[in-house]
Structures are given as structure tokens and as C-alpha cells.
Amino acid sequence: MLKGFDVSAAAVKDLIHHGEPVQFIELRHHHKHDWSLFKARGALRIENDMLEQHLADMPHDRPIVVFADCPGEETSARAAEMLMKRGWNDVHKLVGGFDAYLEAGLPVEPATKAVPATRIMWL
Image 1 (cartoon, rainbow, N blue to C red):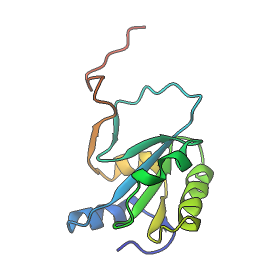
Image 2 (image 1 turned 60 degrees about the vertical axis):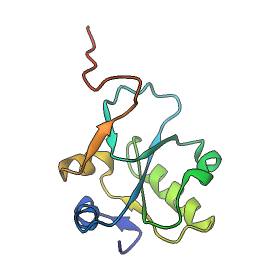
Image 3 (image 1 turned 45 degrees about the vertical axis):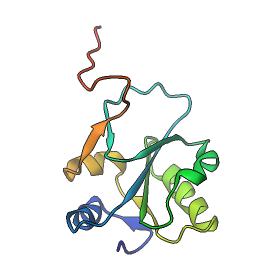
Image 4 (image 1 turned 90 degrees about the horizontal axis):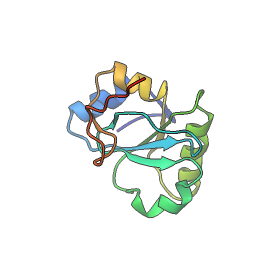
């Protein structure tokens, strides 16, 4: 079980290491073109202004860890607080966002099924 509203990537890694399921919610800014190749394994990627339309996709039976691609952590905090007001009890904001997730060596997968992870951009 994760403790506190703010959670570190190390605490999440420890939980996963012990076989506990975690649901990641990755919020994306709706005006930002997404060049990312990877996402947190199993993460729901949602535009930050579309969170309410995806409530049915979010489980109640495991911890939910929210992070965003926006600078700072206000977007993640607002989303996590909104989920708590809507009835989710085990919701946390990932301190440091996806960068902290990657630095902790947590598992990733391709961001989309349609684009291979070997995508190359020619300049």
C-alpha cells in the first residue's frame, strides 16, 4: 500500500516489486504534439481536460498513481484530488513525474500500438 498523497518513484517501485498492481494515469496536454516513444507500462494516457470522460476506465481495486507531462505538478495534483472527490480512495501524485519514473528504472512500453518504438525523426 502506498502512503500519503505525494508518492515517490522508489515507493512505487517497491510496491510493484512486491507484486502489487498499480494503475498509472498519464495526463497529456491537449495542445501538445506527442513525440514520446514510451509510457509507464499499463498507463492510461488521457488528455488533461478529458479526465472526467474516462472515469469508467479507472479501477477502484488498486492504487492509482497520477503524473502529467506539464511542468510542475499542479495538473497531477488537481487530477488526483478530483478522483478522490469522485470516490477513489487510494490515489497518489507521483513526485517528479515521468522523469522520476524513468530514473527509478520502472517498466515502460511503447506509447502507442500504431507507431513502433523505433520511430526516427529526420531533421
